[in-house]
Image (cartoon, rainbow, N blue to C red; front, side, top):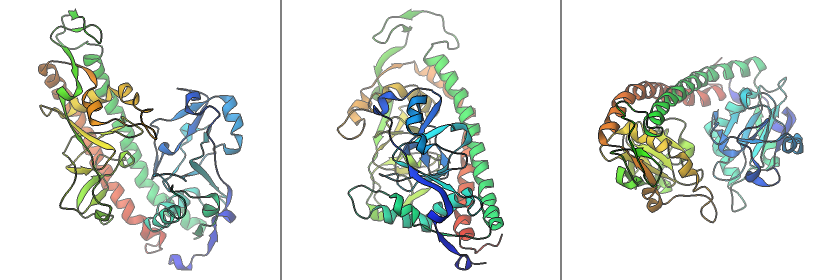
Length: 405
């Protein structure tokens, strides 16, 4: 049955709740590093999946003040303001109990009429996604979706069993992608633990225990304190002209910004013969605008937009570069409050960051050990990128009723 034959209804008639939250009194200074309740912000809501990066926690009292935006299992989340407007995912059980801030809206379908997962995928259908982005760009100076706009969304209603089947097909792909992501996170944590043991706590093979004083405290003899720019080459990104962007898989792979860090293989493309900035295969990518210091790896040569930097150790030790930069997360995050509008780090400050520089022999020893771990990560990333392409090809066909389920 074509989607044209499915009845359509306003989203307001299909939901138990549509509404956004608020920032607790006192703002982010009052957030906890851990606590009884999570506070979901726009940075946690990425297309198709929930990001745990920068997840905030709040007290029981703060959560009580936000009881009207309590999260329930299977809620669909949509970003409603700013550059991340119209990003959609579902809340994972692991973050409940939770609340949302004012940049995120909760959509809670009546599941006797509308399956939450089906709604999520409908909103992520490129045709409807573009519709939402068009709505959000009308009017004010900042992209925004209002509650009234969301309530007026017209949703096609195939039979519940059809909704379920569509959601199951697409979810099977996303669940494998998520499993790969979790496995890779474990592998990365293993490699980072080895790095920290060798280069942060200085318990490296062959260590004789001899230490010398430095500006950053005692360090092994033969090591030194220097600037990041002495160890790494840094390329700051610059976005190509907007008319060069395309969604048809043509042109250069393109990381437009930190929000594209779903995979190491970028999904976006730019069609241009004059890319402003390149990142090369296995370069480390760092976000240089808020949130500063989020990281990824380019799994292939690509173009990087403003807001990103590509970094490589000067001798081409790719694995060392990534884990070295991850060990500097606290220093990157110190730039979060810089600037008049949002946190950022410029090239001069990036290159001028103080760091402890080991001998090249120790860098190579780590590179040889960690590369086998990185190879396993790379293969799972490649598989996930392929699965995402299959999902993205199936999604509009399923939503249009072109594929019968």
